[in-house]
Image 1 (cartoon, rainbow, N blue to C red):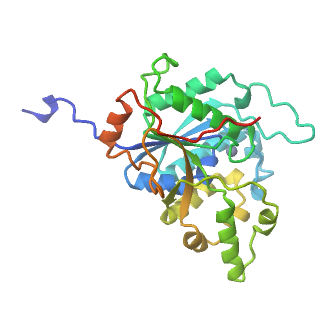
Image 2: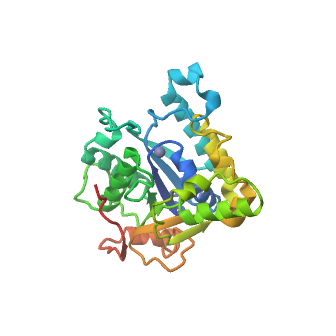
Length: 321
Ligand SMILES: [Zn+2]
């Protein structure tokens, strides 16, 4: 028989990871080396950007007065995201909401009308549920209940991701947003721990180098969150840095980010940290893989499709207002 008359080739199932972020550039500063590592291992990775980053400031002094950038920052950020996406080797989709901006002043000004943080929750959650049901991730990442840092879009990214993780597998929820699909594990990005910054700081001081972190460490009040999972990703720090630099308007190439030599980072903190927030499979002590416990892609898909799943790990807490 001629091959073309046979049925379709069986689709080779792959593990799938969805990383939800607030703005373009967040994907390159939080978990980028992990994503690049998984891409290299054959995992399908999708970055979802909740907003277009339209209200971001231009943080690269060399580009601050560039009239072309000032005329259409939204388009510039779309182009930067496309460049970072290509470097990371990930898929990407825009959820399509508008940057809420970082309110500053005392008292804080009201959030701008129509922004992501003010959209009705059923609208933003449904948009992410639709993406989950389309991409069918086995694992999702997002931010903790404090947003990792207190930008209204980062906090909303958490709220929407957690709700969508719960709703996507429920046939009664958002019935017009696709076939139900239940992701099996939900993680929070956890890179900005005092332990990590202190380790880098101590290494620089021991080398007789200037540390950019002295002041930050002296004023550190936030306790470190629980790290359940460490992804050894030092081999991909160069990819992470190139992706970050692709967001040219958002990164000062001479700023703190690039003050610690890469080989020091690779030696002192060769992993990216995660906090398991919810999981339908047990989280083992000292976990070093976001897909741990899921087995092969076929098995993970079978589990996700099996129905009647029960969470065996759930450390999510309500955000305190
Ligand atoms: Zn952000």
